[in-house]
Length: 115
Image 1: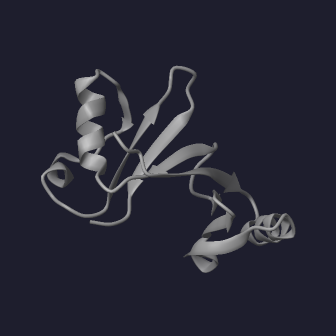
Image 2: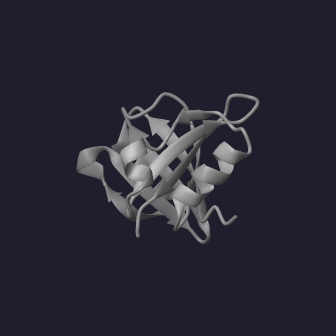
């Protein structure tokens, strides 16, 4: 099972201040839209997501090419979903996402952006 690209998604209170902070550390904006309160920043192979007002704690984020097969494997393994893929999306194609919590309560987001 390939979970795809990995990043840490951080909830921030001031996206402009957070962007400036991480730019000072050498990160550059890779994707996102600051006017929509989210940015993906990159430094070498390291990626972080900055999200203002979207969630309360950090997320471990993976971007696979086939989230549905990973969701099925997780379900088959008996893992509980914090946010499942809606039934109508399971039969579809294209972008989708689901979330799990590990045994210590850390949120893991599996977020497919492409076909």
